[in-house]
Each structure stands twice: as structure tokens, then as C-alpha cells.
Length: 219
Image 1 (cartoon, rainbow, N blue to C red):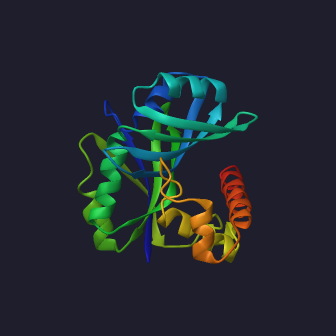
Image 2 (tube, helix red, strand yellow):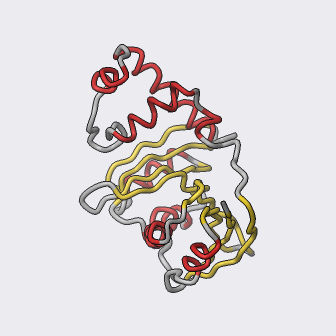
């Protein structure tokens, strides 16, 4: 399996509306996009890594016309924002392009500074022809710089290295059944019934899973 690490730069393009809103305020920044996916009725769900004043982050999200619902957790200047938003900008176009060419994104997509401007670094997995086709069809206004091309080397940050086998089984079931959708499409009781476990055990394990995943973003 081949992997390519690239950096995307742009001029006068709305790459990610929430990140751009934060970029106009020096108190807090979006460090990375750890997850983004369309959910329903034209809405998206995102998980963003933040650095800076988390109270200011909450205020900016409350003021944003693009953020519908959100929650910010963390402390000491580092946090994670979960939000539903009405648009994902060019980032959604990029994800659609990867899906079209059957290319897998190795999350997260990380923002970096390039000569005083913002860039977006990401690693994708696929065949060489598929990666070439995708990079030749980037949205208008997006420039690409190849940083690395080679065989894929799994990261220690993969879910299987963070969660136990039983935790991973529960987490994957919860995602499939819509536990993390808004509103939720399943309950602790229903998940427990499918796994033949008690409701209390499922509730406790989900809390531990979420704690591990949030902590892993800051390692």
C-alpha cells in the first residue's frame, strides 16, 4: 500500500470556515481536523483539536453562523471541539475527491505554518495511479506540495493501539449504530443488548474509550 504526505496551500479560498474564523482571533487556533463527515440534511460533524483560550473558542463557535451545535472539552490551553456545522468548505470537496478515487485519509489533517501563512498537511493511502488522479483534480485555488511518497507505515496512533480489543469492538458498534450522531440513534441499553453485556458496563466502557481517544490527541 502506498502513502503520500502532502501539504496544501491556498489564496482567497474558504478551505474551512471554522478554522478561518478562529484564524482571525489570536487567542485560539485550530491545530488539526481529527474527523469530518457529512451526517444528514446537509450537516457535517467534526472533531477539531484546539490550542489557546478555550472559553474564547466557545464564544467564537457560539457566534459562528456555520456552527449549529458544539461542545468543547479540555484544559490548560489544549482542547477538543465536537461540532455540527452547516458547511465544511473546500475540505469537504477534498474528502469527496478522495472517496471518488477510493483513497483513504490517514487522520488527522493538521494545520501548519508556512512562511507566515496556513497550510494543511495530510497523508493519504492508496495506489500510485489513484493518488496521481486525485492530485490532478484538486479544487480551484488549491496548491499541492509533495512531502513524502512511499510504502505505508502504520502509526502508533491507530485505534487498535489505543483501545483494547473489547473497547474497539464496542466503539465500532457504537459508531455503526449511530451512537455519536446528533440526535443519538441508539442507547447504552440497545448496545448492551447486542453485545450481551450490562448497560452499566457499556456506559463505563464508552466513558473510558472517549477519555482514551481525547487523551491520545494530545500525546
